[in-house]
Each structure stands twice: as C-alpha cells, then as structure tokens.
Length: 286
Image (cartoon, rainbow, N blue to C red; front, side):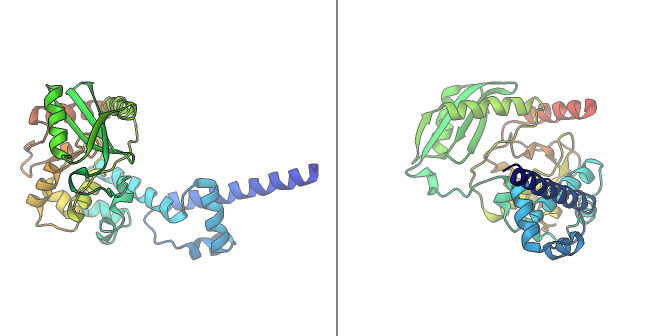
C-alpha cells in the first residue's frame, strides 16, 4: 500500500511539473501560433496525454489558457496607450475573427434561452444603495441580466418590468449577493460576476471588446469599431453601448467621443464622469 501511494504521489508530481512547464511556455509566447501537436512534440508527450493532464490540473484546455494569456497581453498593451490595431497584432490577433466566435464565452455569458420579454422565466432582483445612487441588479438562474441606477426604487422596478414584461419578477437573496458584489467591484475590487444578457451578434462583439479596455483607460468609438473589424461603424458602436443592459459590468463608460469629449451614457453623463474619475484614481495608486 505504501509503495502504491508513493507511486501515485510521484505521478501527481510529474503531472504538476508538466503543466507548470507548459503554462510557463504559453505565458512566454502568448502571441505565437501554438497547436496541441506543437506542445506534445516540445514536451515529449502525446497531444492526448498533454490535453487530458492539463485539463485535469488547470480545469481548462491549453488552448483556452493561451487565449487568456493573449487577452491579458492585449489589455496590457491597451493600458500602455498603444493604438488598438497595433495592440491586437502584438497580442497575436492577426484578424478580428476572434470576436466573431464564442463571444459569450469571452464575456462569461451563458446563452439567454428565454423568449423575448422573458416569457415564462423568473427574473429576480434587489435594490440597494451605491456610490452612484440607488442600484438595481436583476438576474436569472444563469447570471445578471440587468443593472440600473436611479433615485427612486419604484421607478427602477418599473423599468425592469418594461424590460421583461412577460417574466415573473421577485426579490431574491441571490440578486442581493450580486448587488453587494457589484458594489465591491465599483470600489476597485476584482470581482467576477456571471452574466446572462441578450444581444445581436454585433452587440456581443462590441461588448466583448469593451471588456478589454483596462480600468483607468478609455477608447474612442472609432477605436472600438476598429477592434471588431468594422472601422466605419463608430455610430453603430455607440448604439451598442447605449443598448448595454449591464453598463456597470460591461464598461461602456470607458468609450468616449473621437474628439476627447465624454459622450453619452445610459446612466447619466455625471455618473460616467464619476466612474472614469474613480478608476483613474485607483489606477494611479495601484
């Protein structure tokens, strides 16, 4: 029994060593085109064994890990002020096709399978205080589906009912937890929040791009249009920002006019200015 346990421990150690080496290689080469076969040859194991071992240890595939490394590099380049197209190329994106595929995965979303208006679905919500005013957070069983800020609780709930006229609305502890988590996020904490939002393919591509703009930084509507491969679609990008149902999570406040003006914001221009000022202050002391 002792010998078997020792062998099992050695096997686990080898798996961890392999995965650590693979992760290090991928982090050092985020812009490279690396296939599973390439990794297998480099580390002297079969692609199948490498894939199975990596997923067992990390919970995601090597391909997904490399994608996360690329996104991290892209965010870093954008934060340094590099032009959007240069930042994309420098992070290994030779085209904009990455935004056409699996946008919901990149956004952390699940496909919203309810019918228009939330027919037959339960949408729960909570209303509470925030630095921006009274905050409403609504969610399905998959994640947050709406965020709104105002001064009047009744008006916030009525707006939610107009958004989901065929859904059953109810208060819930889950929505309350999401509300508290969102408040922590507004204070600069790194809080991940699950989403369940509806949008056209174009909107999803825009919303995906918005999440790549680092806190404390801004992009113009034209730059976001360039990020998604639609350089002439600045006005459509602005419309997609206005249609964003979770503006405090998908950060459309980080998009400004081409002339440097703040531009519009669904939650009010004064709140957009406050959010940008808060994020810049936090970035300055980070």
